[in-house]
Length: 111
Length: 110
Image (cartoon, rainbow over all chains, first blue to last red; front, top):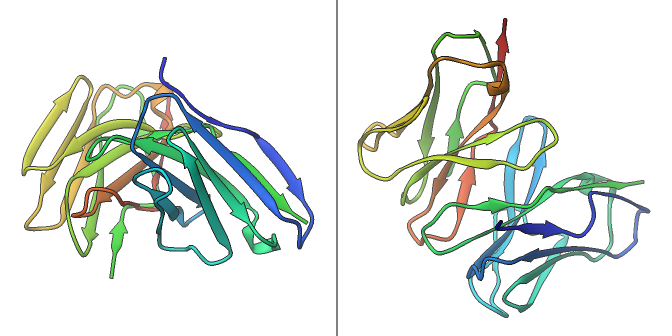
C-alpha cells in the first residue's frame, strides 16, 4: 500500500522555537509538496520540490524553509515559530503530471 | 492572479444527486482535480479532467469547460458516507504546482 508518512500527528511548540516537520514517501515520486490548511482558506502551497536538493517557493513561503537531501524525504522547517503558523500541515507527493498523494497531516499549535 | 471559487457548504438528501460547482482563473492550466476530504483525514483523489467534457467514475462524474473556466463534480445516489469536503484544484502549466480552492463541505442528511 502506497504511503506518505508525516512524523507527528499533533505538535505543540513555543513561540520562537525551531520546528521540523518530516515527511517520507515510499512511492519513488519525483515531486513533493508542503501545504498548510486553514478553515475558510483551503490548502495553500508553501514549498515544493521536483528533485533531490531542488526546491521552489509556493504561494506562502515566508517564515518557512525546506530540505530535500534524499528523494523519499522532504522536511519543512519553521526557523522561529510564530502563533500565526498554527495550522494543519499536509505533505504530498506525486509523479510529474499525476495526482497528489497526501500524508495524514500534522496539527501544529504554536503557543 | 489565481483564484478558484466553490461554494462553502451544501446540504443534500441521501439517495439524491448533488452538483458542486467550481470556477477558476489561473495563470496556466494543465488539468483540474477533485479531491475528497473527510473530517480529520487527508484529501484523497476523486477525478481528473484535462480536456473538455464529462468523466464518469461510478457514482461520481466530473465536467470541465476550459473556455469558461468551469468545472463541476456530480455525485449520484448520495450516501451518508459522502458527507465530506470536496476540493477543486488546478495544476499549472509547468506540471508541478497544484492550487486548491477553499473546499465545499457537503452534508448528507437522511
